[in-house]
Image 1 (tube, rainbow, N blue to C red):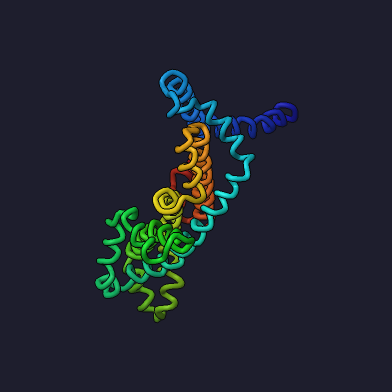
Image 2 (tube, rainbow, N blue to C red):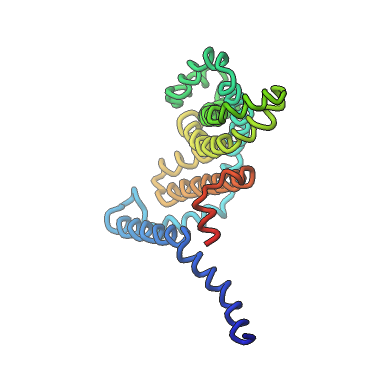
Length: 277
């Protein structure tokens, strides 16, 4: 009992950790990345030329670029438009989506403008922004906002619409006011969809940040990409793209963590079951 029981209890956490490592997604992600990096290395060594450097050269260039001041200056300039534009998209998009989902009359008069935002290629808006507000920070912020606000509006509206109408009718039967309905039913019920829209909008905001710097004003990350492309410095070019991808993945991972913390009741059942197992 004592010796065997103690050894068994001490081995259980190790076994559990090993099972999580083997059956978790991290192992598969590492294997996939290893296969991708190997294929990139082989292709770059044999057929890449000056246009596609090997993976090892890109990795070395990425480490070197992280130690250069021009990267952090570009990071600062690009993220100014990213942060301001994304915050503006959330502040404008969430109330708009909630109102569209709650009041059909508001949607009837504004749905056409939402459809225009959905189908308009945002790159075509850049000349209009240049002519109206110039090449400064404001035009970059506006384009980032236009890129991301649609996802926030659409998901917030969908979150309101997916709430069971019988809950609202029952709350009215018990004398709940409109403010109480919003606070007790609509906001909590729509919050998972809102958080999903915010996470998707964050990815769109990063895309808009890079596109506006490539097509309108060559500053920040876009300026580095254009500079390294003109100099045929392929390793640094790909290293800049890698840094952008790392930032985007880190931001999306942070948004996913906030989404799980803000809406724990919306966690999928299969993940809860795998945790219990």
